[in-house]
Length: 283
Ligand code: PAF
Image (cartoon, rainbow, N blue to C red; front, side, top):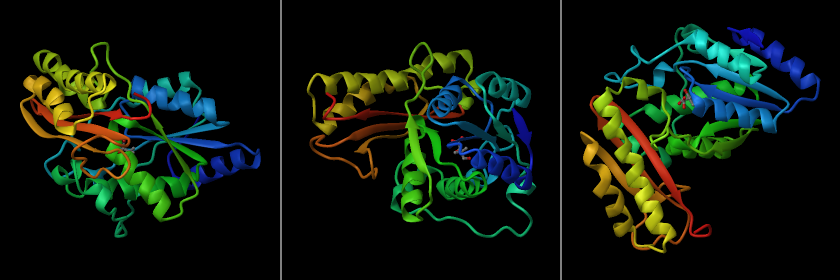
């Protein structure tokens, strides 16, 4: 596994892969890798000839009161995992490499970034879209992999790729879960023992709605009630919404197309998000 820290080295390494005719896959991350990331990398290995992973905690996607300064990190463990998984190229840029002084050009996502997390994390998707566009320009992958847990992030990125004609395909990989259903996240490390127990109510609520949907329930209000009834363990619910899975517009009445129930909530001081896709064609 080659490890590079700057864009010039990255471009040389990627060029060499491209000259060999390799299909290049890319997994952008903020590090503190867990099994969810491993499954993205595994998918990338299955579908591409060369796998590039980046680890960069992107300051522009954190709000002033968010956890940028304390975001968990374990670079040594991340590097060992990448090596074990057969990553070919690991990109570890410093902040100054990604955002040189006087940096002033951003990508402004549209309506898809406004609901759900967009309401509670102003500027977050602007930061995500900007760093992902920059990383795409640096790596120039054929295929890039993102987790379904960050459903709105995947919607914003797909829309950006389409609107700006970026030459990359986006693959969305199903959410990996802990033994009790909690969606894997680097931020789960923040949870105390009691919070960790309570946090599982989010996935249980989503599974309850999914079970009702599979049994034929199509009424959006009833499905949302199934989820809400389980959310006893959270300290502050930011949203629990049923939306169109593509454009994230709210769905009212009957579920007549692919939809998602999305939840964001605080358990203690940790903000957790999760979602479940409801697809009428699969039920
Ligand atoms: O999902 C993440 O880890 C980040 O938002 C991403 C896509 C690496 C951009 O910083």
